[in-house]
Image (cartoon, rainbow, N blue to C red; front, side, top):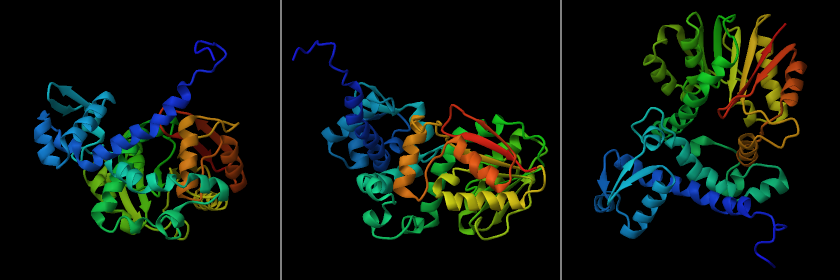
Length: 341
């Protein structure tokens, strides 16, 4: 075969995918080893070897790879964090995503190793991978500190996406926004900062609300916020004329997602709204890439998936909503606003 034969396809897509998992694991390992926390100032390789207790040649290779990936800067025999790693990969940053990175490394990495069986059987991989029957986070978050670190990872995602979501629609008509499954409250906090008249509620399981209380106390809108504990499938929903579901519906199959949408509709007053923040699949389901990869992740880890706008529309109209608008964004979440007549 002539290697310059133009009829031979470019192998770049395959070659890039062959190394993609290696790049992820390099970042995971560097976070796990504490590399970025140590490198808050310029540090020599020999000093890092002592502080981290690693093999010199192996650590140098890891650090040089992180440098190539834009996570570190190298000057002679010293290394230092870039602004990206300082912001997202260090424990000292409020925007850190380390909790979600640890979860990706310790949990999802192993579960994705069984992806073929997910596709064959159409079910998540918790039993196969960890020998229990569901995504029971308490198996991994045995302490409040561990749970809060995971929530801070999701908070880091929220700080990237929430300002865009609350600016996608004009929400000035609403008086009270309740974020169902609101975690740290990043979405409703962003909304209250955007709309000075808006009252905010974070609604989540009681044991998961400690960090939300802390975030609210430290925010400039604390006087307009409250925290309420409850289960959105079983307990009465808080009084509000706007409910938000951010990264919630993709966790559930169609039956449970429809149930949750219906509960929101039934609790809303006339003219009330439901704000959904998820990445929306294209109508032919062939993109965008972020949505498809997240959908695969939901198949591996939950009973849910990502959906098209038509699929969301069907569920919303079935619940009784009559106005449905969507905005696709450049951040990892899109949004839908549905209005109760």
